[in-house]
Length: 515
Image 1 (cartoon, helix red, strand yellow):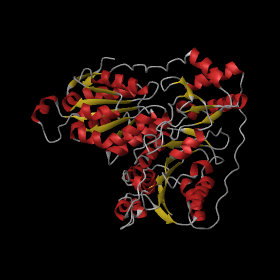
Image 2 (cartoon, helix red, strand yellow):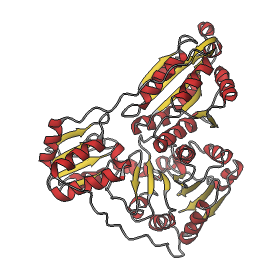
Image 3 (cartoon, helix red, strand yellow):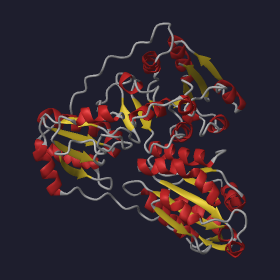
C-alpha cells in the first residue's frame, strides 16, 4: 500500500495490519504524535499506566495469555529505565513485546536538554532487538521488523526508538507485515540420545510452550510412565495449565537445599525448552548448578525450538500414549480460624473459580498455594519469571485484557505490591475482573530467610531494613483511593467467602489477608 501520512500514523497502521490491537502507554511530550495518531485511527485499545513498570508488566501479562505482543509507549530514557524491571521479567519469560520509546527530535539532541540521555544504551540490557528510526518513510518498516523479531520463537523484547520529528514528519508509508522466524527443527541425534536416556535414573525438565499445552503434558506423562523417567518443571514458568483434569508436573523448589534434594537421585536429565536449573543466588558451601555434578544432560529442545513437537516425536518413537489423568482430591474450604500459611492456601484453593487465571507473586506467604491448588478447578498459572518484584499487579492487568471472559486471581505479597501499587488505578479504570489478595505479613519475609542463608547473625538494624511496620501499610485504603473496593480479613473462612464473592462480580476487588 502506498498511502502517505506522517510517520506515527504509518507505524500504527502497519502494526495493526500485522495483528497488534493493544497499546499499554505512559507517554510524554516526545510521544504526542503517537498519542494523536492512536486517537485519530482508533485502531488499538489504549491502556494508560501511571508508572512505566505497570506498562511493561501489563504487556507481559497480555502476551502470556494472548500469545502475541502488545506495544508499549514509553517516554525517553528515564521512562524506559523505569520500565526496565518488568522488561527483564518479560525477557526471562520469553514473552514477546514491542516497546516504542520516544526521543528528542533529531535537531534537538545536540543541545543536551534536561531529559536527554542515551536511549539505545538504556534499552540494551533488557532488549533482544534495538533500533533507532531514521526517517518518517521507513519508521513503519522498522516497526514491522521489530514486531517480527519479538514474535519469533522464542518471544523476544524489541525496542524501537522514535525521535519526535520522525513521528510528526509527513511521508510515512505503511509497511507489509514481516513473517516471524519459525522455530528450529529438533535435532534427530538429540532426539535419539534423549530417548536412550529415559529410565528411572532420568529426569525430564520441561518449560516454555510445553507447560502451556495440556495435550503435550499428558503425552509427556505417558512417556514418563512407560519409561520410568521423572518429570519436573522449572521453579518459575511464564504460564502453566494446571488444576483438575490436567497433568501435574512438580516444580523444582525455590529453596536451595530443597532444590538440591529434589534432583539428587538423578544421573541423567533431558531438557525441553529450559536450561540446566541454577540457584537464584550463590550461597556459602552450596553449588550454583542444581543437578548433580555427574549428571549427563541432553538438550532435546532449546528455547528457539518446538518442545511440543519434540515430545510428539519422542512419544511416536516409543509408542507412548497420553496418560490418563488422576485428579487430586478437590480442596475443602477451611473452617473459621486465624489465617496461617496453611489455611491461607486452603482458602484460596477451595475458592478458585473455574478457568481462572492465577497471577503468582506470593513470595513467602504463597509457598503452600501451588501444591494446594493441584485439585482445584482448571486454571492458567502465571509466575514471576525474572525475580524482579513488582510484577503481580500489572501482570494481572495484561492477563485480564487478553482474556476478558476469565476471572483473574492475583496472589500478591505486600512488599512487592508497593512497587507497582498504582496499577490498581488502571484495573479500576478498565473495569477489569481482577481479585487481588494481598498477603499482609508486614515484612520482606523472603529476605529475612536469605539473610540467614548467607550465614549472618542479624541484629535489630538489619532486621529493621526488612520490616514493613511503623506504620503498617493500609492496602484497603490504598485501593479505595484508586477506585478499587476492598476489605481486610484475618479469618480463613471469611477469606474463602470473599474470594468466591469477588471473583463472581465484574470489576476489580482487593482483599488484604492479615497473617
